[in-house]
Image (cartoon, rainbow, N blue to C red; front, top):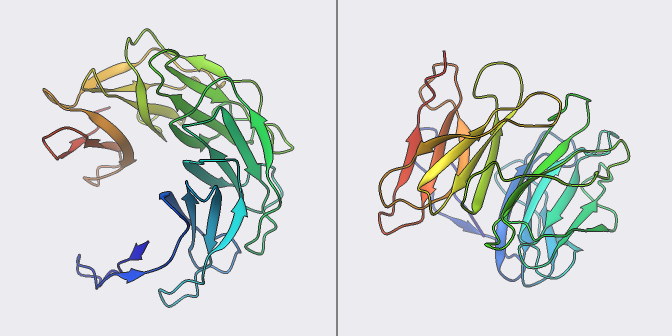
Length: 261
């Protein structure tokens, strides 16, 4: 894994390389131990663990401390799922129908995983409070051509999650990436999902009770293959926009500016 420190002028210094486990697939930056310094969590797919590197504060990080997961983990989200003020980990796999929760200790460490079986393997994951109960929920995508779905798992107070409620929404395509934001300005969390073969993204408007409406589809361009997605206000107009990577021969990234009034 490499870190390129920003210079403040829009450029970056030379890379600093850190050792990880085998086949690092995903990385998240969060302040895990509450020292106001960003730490890093990596998913080491072939090592079957997650690695935690604590930030020292000068752009350096400690060597990774690893925590076992099930085989072939692929994604992780970091947040306080049990409401104890400590950041926890939720890990999924696009190989096995499993999800694990590793409760945080608050000092940068994590307890042993609790594994929750699922009916599906999951490709992407994001977290937010979709039903406004003060507990974090999870959205996942299943990219299987046999059982494509978008699933919502509502959080419980003990850090576990309820049964998956699935949305396929009448879209006859496989969902891949997912991100969360309030795109309509109604203070409810919405979803944006990439649909690879349709060359489109779908925006699912949230109702505030944990359910979502039918998608509003937006093209990402002819022959594009939208894959991963993130959101942010890219033109400083106070509205969330969408950035999508194009996994086709175009080798491009698409920006969709929000026009909601």
